[in-house]
Image 1 (cartoon, rainbow, N blue to C red):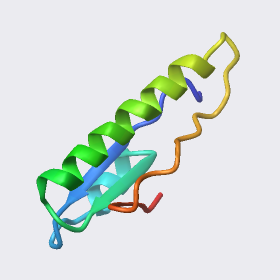
Image 2: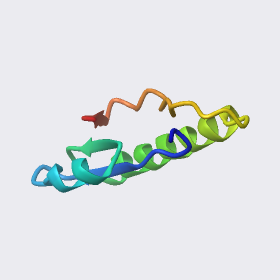
Image 3: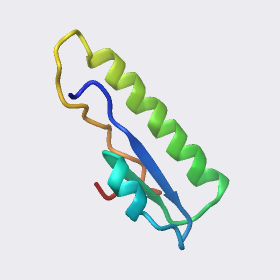
Image 4: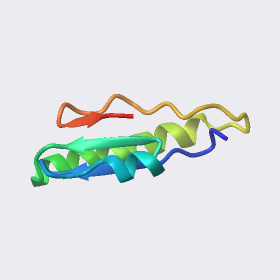
Amino acid sequence: MGFATTVGCAAGPKAERAALERFCDHVALLDTMDGTGFAQFFRWVSDAIAVGSRSQSGAVKPVVLPEPPSEIRLVI
């Protein structure tokens, strides 16, 4: 365990996050569905992947996600 983490994205004011919470380690909430929010989300995911790939040196450790931008709220 600790090799990977899953991040779900619930986008929009009517998004239901309950299903994502059952299957994902983290759920990101985007209250608005604009291009800026999506761009920030994917930039944050890319940064998280880069951090995780650098930190994996054979030892199994929990994945620590970087702080998300203000447009994104993590609920798990």
